[in-house]
Image (cartoon, rainbow, N blue to C red; front, side, top):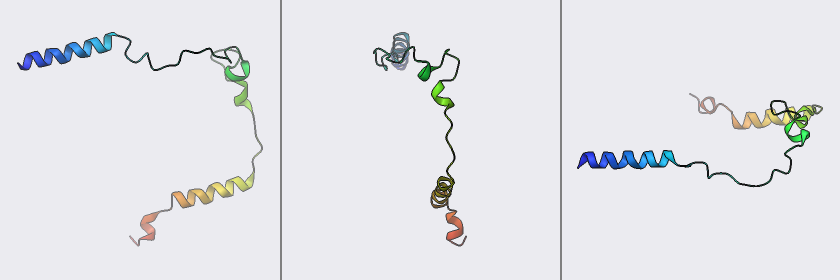
Length: 82
């Protein structure tokens, strides 16, 4: 009886892995940006042009980020007196 159960589990596993099990998790649709160098770059291995954008740093954002970090990652063990 135990061999029959193991054989059934092995058979189901083989059937599940032999078919297109995880290949159905996609959307078949037309890519509107297929040849767009701004989105995908000029070559499949190159970086897209939109990733090369540079932005000027704003010091007030750094101050705000530090305040958020202080709130989120405040050492709670020191606050309890341990």
